[in-house]
Image (tube, rainbow, N blue to C red; front, side, top):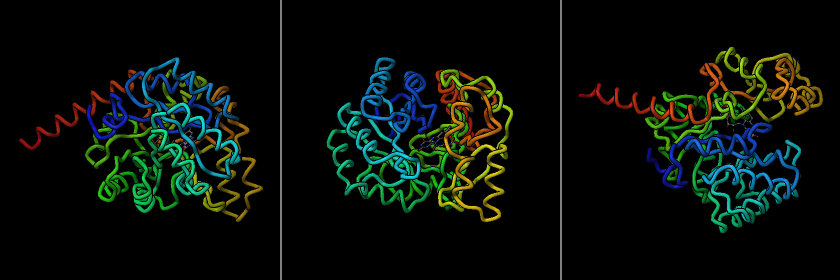
Length: 328
Ligand SMILES: Cc1cc2nc3c(=O)[nH]c(=O)nc-3n(C[C@H](O)[C@H](O)[C@H](O)COP(=O)(O)O)c2cc1C
């Protein structure tokens, strides 16, 4: 496949993995890149520059293909500026191919010195945004591309709640840099649809959890297959950081607290990371925050990354060809 994205990054398929706290470790990252997509290494999982640099080098031992680093610039996730400096320095020194910046714009962080340093080092920078306004700002500020994340996505969709089907073509109308669409992307149909909507590639996260190389507990795989598109909810508007997560005891409690006007202190214990490894490694899915997207309804099997990506591209090609024939 050839799109503006595959050409810019030197990848086989325009299929990217989004940042995934507690999951986007080197083995999964490398497996996705080896399968022709763009794997993701999520910086926030590493405490300092030494640890993070070691992780980058581990990915490089497992693949010689490009991969992406996610840095989520949100003070509320408990990372201090020293840690951010460590991530940016490591990315520049290791000449990472491309970064996914989520949250605050990097070009405004500390007067843009890190943005400039990374650009000068030849690192491409994409900003994940939920609105055309933010996408236009990113393109004007010199980002190499934007990730247009619709309200269907897991993680933290912007509270403007614009769906992927509208956000993608609007973004493509307004910016002249490559657009990667995110939120609800899961199979060959999604890939074909995204290209038709004007995207140059797609980003998925929830779907990559259901791959063999993600190495989550068997119960997690079963839950991803069993739960449906209406099993996720939006929470967190009352504390100024909207999120989408799988409905369970903890999220039901959060919604109840928010409905009666309870504050951050009451909400935090239910959504803090303390349950993280119990969820993914032990399969305890009833408690804690499980950030998944509506795309969970379209996950029917656990595949290797190669099976997933090859299958998606073949399906997209078949759909595009069949639909072209409708015009004969
Ligand atoms: C388990 C999980 C963890 C995530 N962690 C992060 C993160 O640390 N930083 C970030 O920018 N996005 C994070 N996200 C959001 C994804 O990168 C991506 O934007 C979103 O999930 C795409 O929607 P999809 O899940 O429907 O594919 C996470 C998503 C999931 C499913």
